[in-house]
Image (cartoon, rainbow, N blue to C red):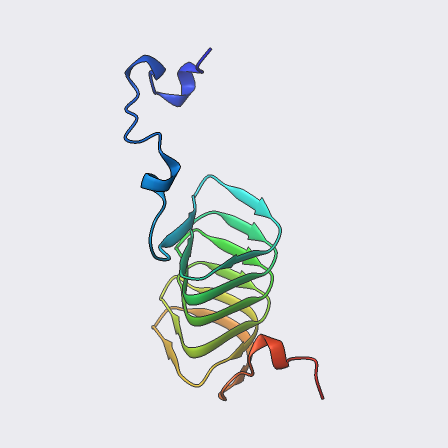
Length: 141
């Protein structure tokens, strides 16, 4: 039985396509961890990711990572661009830029060649303004 609390009626559900090949995207899109979701584990995407809920683990985005207002990451961030409007506890590495929105709270380290901090953002960080090394080169002396 379909739970009434979900607010959907399965008898009136719309199915757009049952062919998986038809429904598969041809390019990386935006992955979303919804506001009511709590995820434990590492996440990696070839595109963009938006964190609206809570992630305990490391996240790697080949393009942009957005931590929305109300979102939280406890773990490492590695992305081309990081836009933070929520809370981050852990190191942030961005090969292009980091933007801290007014609602951001960041605790850890930030490594990036460019940073923008809006008035109102809170941070307790060590800041390194340099080009981060690719993941594959980390740990090698």
